[in-house]
Length: 118
Ligand code: SF4
Ligand code: SF4
Image 1 (cartoon, helix red, strand yellow):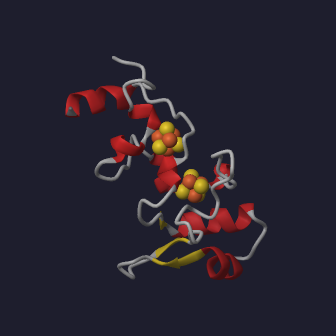
Image 2 (cartoon, helix red, strand yellow):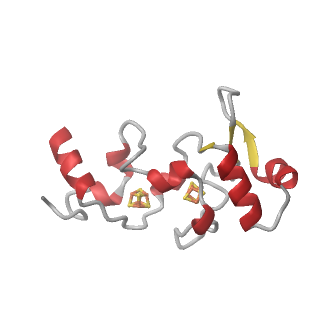
């Protein structure tokens, strides 16, 4: 199974299912992420932090706030990201650079009927 996952990651092509932006834990923000997002939204860092972030569950940093349904507040109805050009590094690197255990169950690009076999 792992070799299949690694093979699919080499040819990874996002299918825009949006599942990685739904309840899957914290999107950990770096200081650079916060600066970039605030600039992108034409907000100062203090206002951005107050409106769009909260403490991570382990209280060691900041994450993006979610909607009541659990999805990221920046996820659009068509599964695009409202802040795509400025999105956090964790989001940029998913799933090739960073991923959570079991991500392949959620990710449409990793499914047998949606991913290109290698
Ligand atoms: S910032 Fe964008 S890519 Fe990252 S979780 Fe939110 S909607 Fe998804
Ligand atoms: S779960 Fe996979 S296919 Fe779906 S949006 Fe995220 S990276 Fe793309």
